[in-house]
Every structure is written in structure tokens, then in C-alpha cells.
Image (cartoon, rainbow, N blue to C red; front, side, top):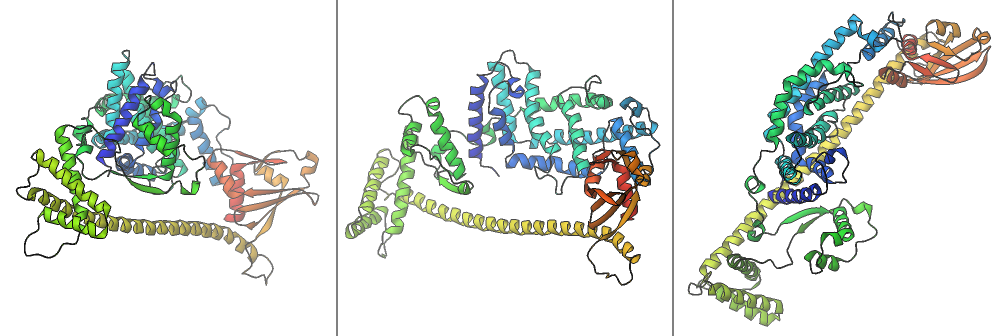
Length: 605
């Protein structure tokens, strides 16, 4: 859970940055069009990647994505791609050339009845999954990180004030850019990068998510698909889906910036620091300290103009930033307690409160340090302080003596304004000191429990990491074993036909299989060749395998080797998946589908 104080400070910083940068642009669209040199988009993108942003994405998108990824069916809408996939599937399955003609246009492919049926089914599936994303995003508005919504509110208010020509439509575009396009959309397209999905994303699922994202982007931009624009023609039937959901998204965008101010939402204000007893603590890496120091030194003249500015005083004490930084230490983190070294002007009541708190802080260590003799009488604060002065004199402890003197001075000042009273031996003050000590013990106990909980969590994370590493290795070993087993079956069958007495424990090796040039051309494995026509009758291709999945091809003409080639079966399958139909080698060009079928039938069946 984030700290309300840190959230308040970072949102205040963003607001100041917005005010400065909006004053330097001419139109709101410059933020998203790249015309203005501004760091604001990067700042907001980094802000969105914090814990609360990632938690929102996981909670909202994970159920939809998990269900979507399970459906291992393509949502490709391009008729030509659908048509080509039908050809590939037929040829690999049967080993025969597809009856469908090759080289057709997209329009011709779209006229095919089977293609029409497939595309219609995919349009329906795409519309349904996009509707689930829309419903999930709209329903989760209240869970959208408060800071992001408030920043959009500030952006809107500042733009309406500084850029009079800004319209509500312009504002909607920028809100959509930051909230949907640069936040939610990135998680939809790359859920594995945000650790939303548990397993590796299958290639077909990633491609489907990109397709769905394209439809959702048009919806959130309130833009229909145009048949005249490249690549949009096949999405035009989804304009009905966009029309239906446009009012919902408009209401969603208008609701994004309707949030209360941070003082109300976070229960924090700029005066809270003055009343805090415990000084704020931050955790910061050495690299962040180094970069902050370097950036401040580089831009100091622009940040402050007065020579006596506190920032200049601090930078003068620090000196120039180091020129070298050990990269091995950049991720080391430090816990720093923040203290204001500069006096803050306070009103009288605040000054009295500060003096009261300071006196308590001075008294507490004395109670621990000064030995007090047992007595049947209850000791007062003055008794303890007198014992402290005596102890300091006996031990030559000048610091203790100075500290007690400061306490007495403070008590005098506080008594003068009726905050404490000597008449009751400062009983109310002593009571507050006792509460302070008791609270500190409670805080330490809470911290001890928190440290124990964090250690337990860290141990669990380490154990889970070990489990994941072992699982990954187990899966890899299993896949490799399956792969070797599949190829080994062919090797065993060949060995049975070999010499009697051949060792069954011999290393994996598939005996060579010979094919004439004419056989491979007839099977349409070879579709183009630079082998001279007169030599083709004497050309023999010998295919063997000493390594699972790797097939060595030895091409001979009249018994003399003229070329040696290597076919990687995984590479062939990848080309098939990507609709690459040809494999060009030095002397011949192979048909990918027919080559896969040849290997399946000759070696793997």
C-alpha cells in the first residue's frame, strides 16, 4: 500500500510540472503528437507502472485475458491470409497440392464460401471479446488509480484556463491517450510484460490481442473503420460494435476526472509535516541519489535564482557530483530519515507545539541515561533533572549538562505561555512523556512484526522462485525428451531393417533415405532449381539425421557430392506458421509445406 504522504507530494510535483509545461505549448494535442519537448507523458507513464497501477491492471484484465488466451483460434480477418492458411493446412495434412488456386487477390479470396464463413465467425468472436474488455474497463472505473484520475482533472482544468481554444473533444483525446492508450492498452497487448498472465503467451494469442486492441483503440478514439484506408477494410463490419459502445465510452471518459482533491481523498495537507512527531522516512537507491545530485547541479541556475536559496546552500555543502559511479552499487537502497535543516516560520501556537515536542524528545534519553536512586517517594521531573546535573558533573558529561539546561530553558518558555505548570511538578508534561515512551514501544513492536512478516514473505518469494526455476527446467527437459523420443521412433524402425547384430543402445541416428531429383520434383518439394536440366536425371538427394530435428541433405550428381544442406525442422515449422511458403537454398528452392510433409512421412510417421 502506498504512503498517502508520498502520494500527496508526487501529485503536487506533477501539478507543478503540468503548470510549467502547459505554459510552453500552443495546443493540447502537442502532448500526444510529439510536437512539444515535454517529459510529462513519460512521467505519467512511469507513475502508472507503480504498484497501484499494476494491481488495477491485474484485477481488471486478468480474468478476461485468461479466458481469451485459452481459445487457441486465430482471429485473422484478412481473407487472403485465411485463404493461404486453408492451403497450408490441406497440404501439410495430406501431402497433396491444395485444389485451391494460388496467387489469388484478396477480393478473389473473399469470394470463397469457406473463407466467408470463417471470417464471419471470427468477426463475431472478436466483437464478443472486445465487449468483455469494454465492460470490464467501464465497471472498474472506481478502482482506476486515484492519482491518474486526479492528474487528468488537473490537465483538464489547466488547459481550459491556459489554452482558451481547447475543446472538450481535445481534452477527451488526451485523457484517452494517457488512461487507455498508454496504460490499459499496453497491458492488453503485452500482458506478459505486466505479469498479468501466468504462462508464456502463445504467438497466436499475442496476434489475437493485437487485433482486439486495434478495435478497442478505434472505439476509445470514437473513430470508425474506413474501407478506403490501408488495412481497415476487413474491420469495417465492426463499426456496428463501435457505434453501440461509443456513448458508454464517452460517459466513461467524462467520469475519469470527477474525483475529490488530494486533501480530502488522502487526508493529507501541506501543514501535516509540522504536526508530525516522527520524521518522514524514505527508501532510495544509490543510483537515484547520484542522478538527483547530477541533475540538480546541471540545472541549478534554472531552478533557483536567489543566492541564499536553501537549495543552493545544500548544493554548496554537497559539492560537485561524482564523475564516476560503480554500476554494481546502483541498485543498493538506503533508508533515510528526512529532517528540515532550515527554520520554518510558524505561528505562535505551532511554535509552542514544536517547542513542547522538542522538550519531550530531550527528556526521554535522560530518563534512560541518568541513574536514579530508589525512593519511597515518587520522583518529580525536577528531581530527575537535578540528578542528571549531578551525574553529568561527576562524569564530566558536558553534552548531558547542556541538554538538561536546554530542557529547563524550554520549560520556562512553555510555562510563560501556560502550556506547562511548575505548581503540579509538570505532571501533565510527564504524563505526555510517558505516553510517548509507551507509543514508541508499540511502534517498535509493530516494526518488529513487520520485519518478521517481510522476512517470511522474502523467504516465500525465494522458495517460489526456486519452484519456478525448477518447473521451467522440468518443462524444458520434458519437451526435449518428447522431441527426442519422437525422432528416435523413426531411428529404431530403420535399425530393425538394418544389420542383425546392430546395437540397440547406439546413439541416435536415422539411416539415410535417398530421393531422386525427379521424385522430389513430382512431390512438389522442389519448385525451382538451378541444377542444369541435363544433370537432373543423375541427381540424388540423400537425407539423414544424427541430431533430433536436424536433417542433413547430401546432393550428388553421378555419385559426386555437389552440395550439402541442413534442414532444421523447427525452422520449417516456424516458416509455415508465418505463411512463408518457400525455402531458398543455394541450388534449389523448396516448398515449405511439402518439405514438412516429406519429413513427416519419411522419418516421423
